Amino acid sequence: MKPFQSLIFLLLVTIFVTLISYLLAFQDINFFNIYKIKPINFADIIKQDTTKTVDISSIIENNKESLKENLKKESVKDTVSIIIKTDSSKIKLKSTALKIENLKSKIYNLEFPNNNKSQLYNFFKNLIYSKKTIHVLHIGDSQLEGDRITSFIRNKFQKKFGGSGVGLIPAKRLVKAFSLNQKSSDNWRRYSVANTHNNVIFSRSSIMGGFCRYTKFYNDTLKDTTVYSATINIEASSSSYYLDRNYKQIKIFYGNNFKPFFIELYDNDKLLDFSTAMSGKSLKIYKYKFKKTPKKLIIKFTGKDSPDVYGISLEGTSGVVFDNIAIRGSSGTFFTRLNQSVTKQILKELNTKMLILEFGGNAVPYIKDKKGAASYGRWFYSQLINLKSKINGLPIIVIGPADMSTKENSKFVTYPNLKYVREEMRKQCFKAGCIYWDMYKAMGGENSMPQWVNADPQLAISDYTHFTSKGAKIIANMFYNSLIYEYNEYLKTIKKQNKLKKIS
Image 1 (cartoon, rainbow, N blue to C red):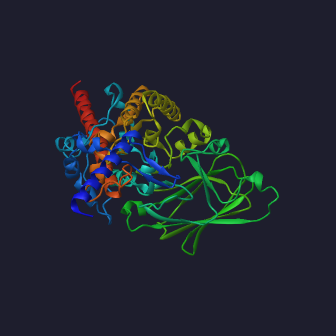
Image 2 (cartoon, rainbow, N blue to C red):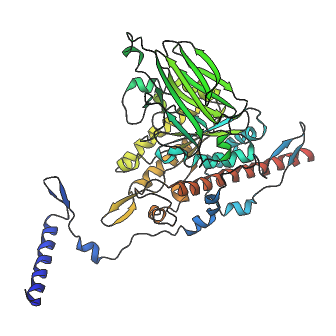
Image 3 (tube, rainbow, N blue to C red):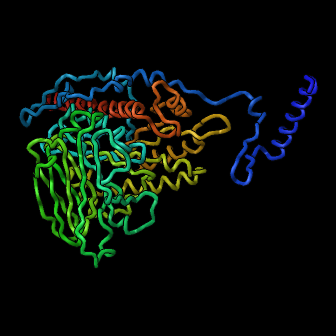
């Protein structure tokens, strides 16, 4: 074929493809539902790109130190503003580790309903004065899986205020955690409230959004006389923070076992404890204090009927623990359907002083308009009210969804209705008297997720939804700075009040 003929042929093909694309209104062409062709949209090629771009270089620069966190042995407390009670009338302040002026430039502030910050004061007091371990439950969706985000915040707080251990873990994990190596025997089964309509699972679930068992439900094993055993092996992880690896006690929360069973604790082959757990439906708690942290903790359950294991807490005997509770696929609208009595008892036993809820991401792709976002917001409000009723004065911080991208033609852009979900969550959060932290704005706002995905090092994975471990550290550092900034503001308030008392 001559060059001139080739040119004519190409022009005819181009005209033909353009005509077909126009007639099909740029719809995908499917061949037998197997192969798909997306026609060329020439209008997209010709028109000027108006997609908003975001510069996140300052965010990375301001939080780059978080990527260098030392995983080796660290002091339990570093310099920090701490109120030391010398007697009933005197308060002394130590110098701050990070000047508030410097901190302001590195944070996206927490937002308070009616600018009332006092609901955090009791939490701050407990950080300083409590002689018992206090817990902060960080509950969210798959953005938290593997102890991402939580582990960084936990380490920063434990270094400053004391404490050790990772807190609550499930008997069986879905994914490997950074903070510890956990291997559960194959007969463990995890029941989750996410993506289920089974009322039995909801009615038997607690604050971790599910439970684990190593036998079938009792009604299915009435005639079964088999004695079953199940194990959980726990060792330190090379990627964990030093304080994660050192815990002083274990608490196992369980119930709904209709036959007795045995709990054995081992450090490798050495038996540490042997205990008989009696049958019963109500919540029961097994506790044991270690002389030293086991190198390899083995928890062995033996019995004809498994209990519902709600959670296992590995913690110190004082200080603070941030518990990582990741519920994959959840939009955070399950709390009202949990076993309310068991949930309240576990929160009380843990000495829970604050909740951090991180949801919204799983709702965004399915919400199509403002009406849908408003409906989700009302559901979320009811969950906040339910949780606040469990402990009087319990502060709740809601972390809104991150930027999430959907593909439009050849570009990744923010989901069009994400803004409505954020607005409704913030609105309902304030209505319920809770605190809000806007992760979307903190990471750069509209169309910032592609910049996190394309950053070097990569800060978010190619699903344009989830952070990498490095990205999670940056987000965690920004949130931590926001919270510790309010702590420093609290110290200033206390200092001012103390001066006024002296004057009066």
